[in-house]
Structure formats: C-alpha cells, structure tokens
Length: 451
Image (cartoon, rainbow, N blue to C red; front, side, top):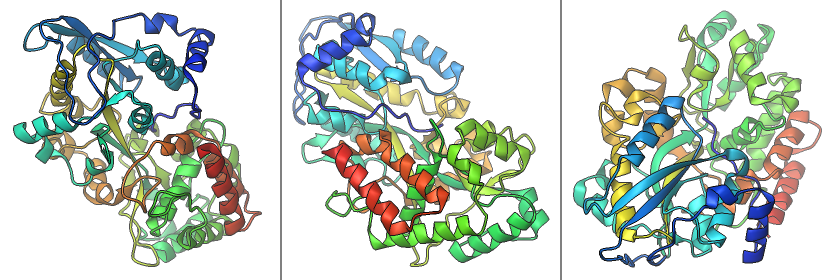
C-alpha cells in the first residue's frame, strides 16, 4: 500500500482552520466529545482526570483490507480502560480530506485522543502544540517488553528534542521487483549493482520488456519515490545532515545521471510519464514490466498468482551504499484527550492487536509490513519469501527523505505531499534536461513548499 499523502499542508491561523472546517463540510466529523482534562504536550506530563469518565476518540485513515476496518471497529468499540471509566470510538477519516479534517478539529479542540495519520503528521501537529509526547508510553513499553520487540531503527526517528512524537506500528517502503520468467527469457542474471542492472535492462529491452517500470501521472507517486530511492541507494537524499534542502548533492546528481542512462537505453516506457498506478500494475500483469521499484504488496496488486514476481536484493551503489525510501506508519496521542493515562493505556493495548498468531499482521490485512520482531518470526509471515526478504534485506537500509540527517521533522509532510517531486520525475522521464538542472528545480520547489 502506498503511503497516505494529504494535500500540501499550509500553516493556518485558528480562524482559517474554522473556515476550512465549514467550507469542507466537516462539522459532523467534529461533533464533540469534550476536551476534558487535556493534559500537556510536554514529554513528562501525564495529567489525569481522577474519577471522571469519558470517551477516547480514535481516528484512522482508510487503509488495509475491509476485514481490517471491520475488525478494528469491533475491537476498539469493545475496549474499556482497566478502571472502567473510559471507552473508545472508532472513526475512519477519508483520505480526500484527511489533512483538513485533522487541522480543523485540532483548531476547534474537537479532535481525537489517539490517531493514525499520514507518515509525518505527528511532527506537524507537535509543532502546533497539539501532540502529547509519548515518552511515558515508551517507558511502559520498556517495562512490558514491547520496546525491545521493535525492529532496529524504527523507533529512533520519532525522537525530537521535546520527546517522542509518534509510535511506529508498520512499514511501507520502495523495493526492487523483477519478473523471473522475463529475466530467464532474456538470459540475464538478477542484478546486484548498478552496472549489472543497466546491462540487464538493455537485454530486457531486446526481449520487449522494460527494465525500469514506473508511473508519474496524475495521482501516481512511484515515479518520484523511485528516483528518491535511487538517490538514497547512492548515499544521497533530499536534505543535508542538518535537515536543510540539498537536492543538488553530488551523490544525487550521480544517481540521476545513472537514471538518464536507463532512459537513453530505452529501459523506461516513454508513456510512463502519464501512467497512473493502475497503468503500472497493468504493465506488470501483461509482462511488459520486467524490473522496477514498487511497494511491498506489488504481487497482490499485479495479480501474481504464479509467484513469478520476486523481490531483488538491494543494489550496491558505485560507492558501496545500499538503501531505499521508507515510511514508518505510526500512532500519536493528542493533548485534547479526556485523560492522558487512558490514551496511553489504549495505545498500549492497541499495539498488541497487531501481534500474535491471530493479530492483524498474521491475518495479512494491514497493507503494511510489521515492525515487531515477534511478528516477523510468525509462520504466517515467514511463509511469504518476498516479505521475508524485504524485512531481512531492505528494512535495515530503509531511510526517509532526510536520509542524511538523524530524524524526521514536520516539513517532510509538505515535501511528500507536494507536487515538486512528481514534476521532477516527469522531467527526468522526458530525458531532455540534465540531472543537475532538474535537481536544482526540485530544490527550489522544496524550499518553496517549506517557506
């Protein structure tokens, strides 16, 4: 499943938030469960409301299979706090107005107590003072063993100078896939580095298949994601070590020069500049796509019932680097909860619903990959060779847009949801602009959306 991408966020005053809520017709979603004892956004605060009772609002985007949504609603609405004082409601927020809904609700103090959202949402709303940092929750997870169950590197990005903004639950990343029968037909081995990838793509072109299947049309994100993944594979990324835009970094230029070689060699379908995601899946289904970067569930989306699609090992870049673009799906807690201790108790319980032989991951309904070692070890996960390979080989080298800096930050949401990266992908696919010029334009676009 692709990462959830909201419209490009713009800072709004409270008046703007409320106007937006009315314009978008969001009032029914914001019907009040009072703010109650709102607690504090500071890392150490866990205000309690004593003997008060209340309802925790849990908001989620629409993701996973229908079973995931149905079972989630049943479980959440059956939850009660250990004291019996708090229950929870379950609300799916449509992707089309996800960002606006959260923004308007936070401004009017009618938002959720706990939510999932798009990848960088916690950092945006933490900057607005709306998030309760999860340090106490992490202390509880260290006490009950949940913290030690996390895969390496998935918790650290949520640490800010004020505390932990979010709590990871699932992975989404971009990985290289190939169709085994097409490589066999072309008589080429599975590539291991950039030179062998280019050589394989040229042979596949002779066999009538494309070696870099992608899509950069309306609503498609693969084109830009694949190019950023290639930059990360070369030790690059869109930001420098201090989190400042640095798209023109020399490693990025080198990576895009390599991509230009693929375009010039005919490895990329010229029509992919306007392809939707479905067009791309159709290419994989029809046998026109032989290799390319896609999400972990490509086999399902391309209808691969013959197990002909396989995940490649991460390529070794020219300087020995390995890497790809990764998203960390996460939960967050809000200051408007009726009780912060109850929010923490709920979220600790909710994380457990993803684990075990009967958990969401074992059922295969989430649309994401697990972040827990115990889940990775389950037979239901281990039986899928592609999933195992992604978790074993790709997850350890997965990074975000700020791959050269140490963590996540709010501005990444604007970059991920903006148009600059998709326009950059279209420029590169057209093959008429040199890499450095295209990257300079991308950098200007990133700076503009962050300004």
